[in-house]
Length: 390
Length: 144
Figure (cartoon, rainbow over the protein chains, first blue to last red):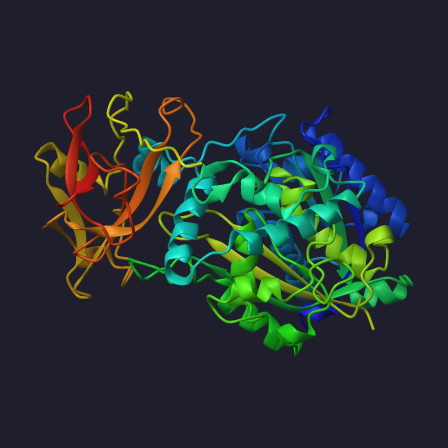
């Protein structure tokens, strides 16, 4: 028994919108129905529920069981994963672990958030005491600080970062579920000339917060075979690291937990970066994509800009990048936003990428980034490698 | 396109901090314009921000409080150009991370420094900004 004894047999996703017209549970119900339709399962076959965090659900200490109640799901395993943007990929690993431990057989991984419509988040962290009194705008300020440090250590070529922004935007144009406002092509000049938010972070570096939902059905491979699913995606490698270098007072913010998580995931999968067929990194800011390329070993630390200039990230290129547009060009579905790139990776491996289908569907690499600690980069890094069920 | 001017944030009304039980010694120190840092006696190292335990050993009994010099150099900085209230309208201003000589990074606003002078490595010293409850907010200015 292991991680790879679980399989994703279906995905679902709503249109990403600037502000939801309906309640978060209505979006969740939409995901449930789409997954039941796609799998042909009865809802009674779902015996596990794992939710991502949700800014809408943040006021409720009973979020996973309340959601189970709202959707009338009778389950043997019920939890919410609260590692921020890592929660959707983390949910898949936790589903596999729960299935592996015999706690349940078929898990609904549900990623819904309507942060724009209804934000109930009241964070209890370092922020009230140590950063809010400084006019610190959270993630953009944190990424401004780390980008400036990166620039100091290695130099930072805005045109390289702009190339990533353009590739993702081109993909969002091809993704009918991406937020409509963002489905307009941009150029590298548009990126470079977009206004500064927190120097050197520009407007087109940043995600736009949106509302929406996505979800997966994860079941045991045995059950997937028994039920005759012809399309299934298997997690073959997973690594997760929270508070990288926690015991150090000063941490180089250009180094991230993806180094540790990536090494573990690649080893487990028996793969190397050169084997990656498509790359679906968590993208809250463009520079995070480059830092992940470095930490995962696609290139050396500090050489991300050169690697970007030498690589074709279009869905037809040698390293397809966030083929649905990523969060930056499809819209960030609050704390459920990590689901966008997870679902896109599964969609590609199912061969359902339509106008943006990648050629090489032998695997896909998905990542997560979650939480912003004080004066560092991010709190949690996850790396998950998916392959079609061969 | 960079503005020539960087604003200072001294006019912005700020609330007193709400210290946690374990961070109270830091805020008490600011009343006398002292920077009090947590120091792990066994590791021989400082830590910031104040935490409920040692980041080095996980043992709260290893922690004592020591006064720091407050001098250091800019580790990195950003220019805040879009903020929420009460900072809205006061942009642009600096947010810096300063590496104190004691070996910790502290985040703060700055005074008496413009775009032309700001750079990573710039030597800084404390500047204390009074808060309504008699504590002081730590800011930095160049140590010329």
